[in-house]
Image (cartoon, rainbow, N blue to C red):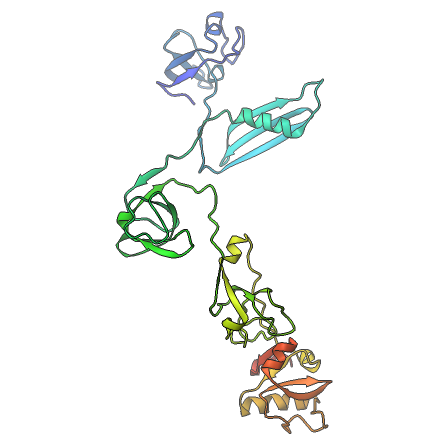
Length: 373
C-alpha cells in the first residue's frame, strides 16, 4: 500500500472510462505512465475503498489499482516459494514470502504457437520477478570472528599457508580473538586478530573442497583408509574401507592386527569423504550373539576367564553341543579363550584366525545368554 510522500507510476495501460472502482476521466488517462507523488491516503465516504490524492491532480480521486503496483524487494536471504500453474494454454507464476503473495506473472501461448511448458513458466516467472534482487552488501569489519563466518587476510604476520587477500572460513574461535581456519593445504592454523577483518554478509559461491591427504597413522572410528596389503581374504591392496569399532572381526576394526600396524597395512585418507562429496558408509553394527549363528559356525565367542567360560559351557551343555570327541561341553578341551563350532562340534580357535575367516568374535556376557533363552 502507498503512503504519503511515495513516488508512484500511473499505469501505462490506464484508459478513460475504466471503473476501478472510481471512474477514470480523460484528464486522468492522459497521466498514464507518468511518475506522481502521493499527497494523501484515506478511505472513501463509505469506508470500503482506499482513496488516494496526488499532488499533480489534487482534485481527482485515485485508487491503488490505477497505479503500477510497487514490486517488493527480495533479498538473497529471503525464504520464498514459487508456484507455477498451468491452465489450458495459460501459465501463471506466484512468488510467496511466508503466507503472502508478493509477486504474480502470467504468460499465454498464442493460438498459432507451439506450447512449451518450460518456456511459458520462465516467461511467467520473469514477469513476476520484475523486481530488484538486492545482494547483501559485503562489509569488511574489524572485530572478533565467529565460527561459520568468513574472514579476509589483510596483514599476515607469520603466514602459514595463507597470504594477504585470502578469504578463509572460520572453524572455531580462540583466545585473544584468534580465528582457527584451514589454510590452502587444509592444515588448521590460528590467525591473530590483527591479521584479518570479518566479511559480513559474505557467502562463498563455491564450497571449498579440502585436499585429500594420505597419512600414516592409526585410524579413528569412521575414518576411511586405503589398504597397502589385504591382510585377509576379505580385502585386497588398494581397497578403501572404513574403520569400525572393536568386536567386528572380519572388518577393518579398532584393535585388529591390521589397525595396529599402519606402516605395513594402510594409510588414513583425511578429507576423503568431503572431497568426493560423499558420506562414508556407517560403521557396521557390532554383531549380536545368536545360538543359531554359533551352532552354524558363523559366530565365535571369547571367554577370557574361568567364570565366564564355565557359564558359557554350561549353557552349551544344556543345548546339547559337544566337543568333536563326543565329550560334554563342560569337559574343556582347549587352552584357547575363543570358542566356536566346526561341523557342529565345539572347537578352540583364535581371534586372528576368525578375523581372516570373516567370523566375528563376540565377548561373552550374561546378557547374550538371557537374550537367547
